[in-house]
Image (cartoon, rainbow, N blue to C red):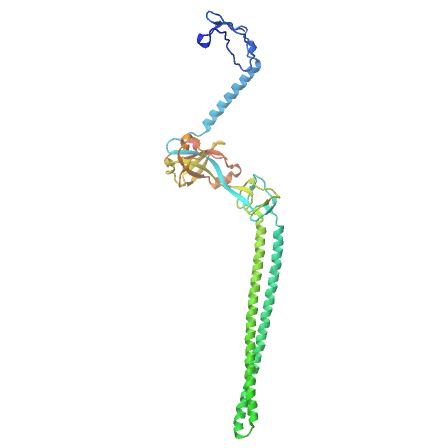
Length: 411
């Protein structure tokens, strides 16, 4: 198939005195299909000779595929636009955000080596479940040492109590001696009282009177010494009782040390503080961690919310507990109910996640829409964090939700 001669306007040629042939840019074509043009001095007629057809079967096949792909993309966009809720009108406001959940870091209290991790990423765990075990060889040795010290303290208490009993016996013996010496003193005083009048009458000699007087003084001195022994025994009893108290304090301290070490051993079993799902394994078995080193990261799937941003002209109208309907980009066929649980007290510059340029130029207030715990428990395995979506908020209590924003959750 050949083309007829074609006339080229003068304004298409930069130099009419020069022979110029049009350049052809065709993808996948062989330039040899086009022959050089012929310049005529009068009228500048260019003759195309031998231009052959270039529509090969392979090119036709690619064109068909491209047409089908473009049509499928157009249908997909139209379908997504049809399923995506459109603006319901006055009384409603929206903001885009992402699904978030409370994150919990499971960390070791003491420095040590990770012995074992019992769960993997994505596993569901319950409160109190053991997730990981730290090595406790050193703690076991410390507990044995503390228990031995506790036994020594108990023995010290028994020894101190025995000392108290011995000192009490010494006091009782000294008190008995006091009674004996008091009796001897009384007898000596009576004898001296009889002999002294008799000496005036000459019935007894003065030597006898002097001896009786000396016996009285000796009995008095002996009684004073015995009473001092009683006081010494009382002081010894108090000292022994103080030893008992000290030994008892040693027992309490050693028992507290045993309890502390046992608590550290218990804390070496890292347990889940609440129901949730393992998001990351931060450490691996065999790694040595410092105190507070993270081992696992959990998400509490019963505390899920969406954070979005509203302009300052709207945030003042939002009340806590207001009804919110959430539509996720990944599941536009569902509308999830939620309630406003938090409105920021101060504005902030709009984050980059806000889509429109006009909104990025304004200060925005952060709003949190909390999804009910009961709904989350029913669909626990379907809950995913990080999913983007749109939160629709009803400002007018009298307004009715449109059909495309009516609550619809998975069965």
